[in-house]
Length: 222
Image 1 (cartoon, rainbow, N blue to C red):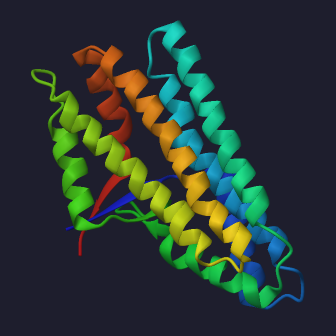
Image 2: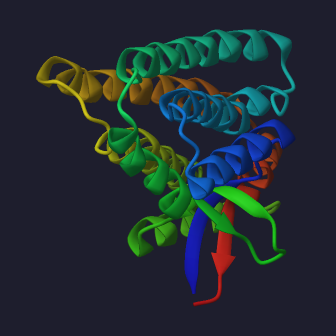
């Protein structure tokens, strides 16, 4: 079995994907960069929405919700700022590696025939995530193992959507050097979110959290 990380895109994102594919397949003589830039920004928004913003609703305590919302807002701003710096008015031939990456490595059809935005997980990471989720049951919770699973999922998402994606961009040295710095900042924010949230949740809350994240892990037949 192969495991993927993936979320179901909104109707808006689905329409943007279809339009970008139609435009490139038909060979329209238009600038590609606005489509690439808008598509990338929307994927980033929905990734944050699924992994972080929706998570706030799982937290029962209003004070904890407010604290988590501040952290999430910081991560969202950092992501948007990074993309605004990196995504420019590139030539069409320089856009194609990004489009190909988004189409071939950042989308898949799940077992129910639904398009998802996501990617194949390395086996070791998939095993770690599965073990962490399995360590959370109504009868017993291994909080440390669960935390490792969530950290692994976040790290794989950052690696794919930031590190691997930005390899497809034609960037100068200064912009290229800004990527790992920004990635560390976003990763730190996600770590703060987990470190602030997990110790405060009782076992029932951790079970809710596990149920929230499990649908993002998709098992696919080889």
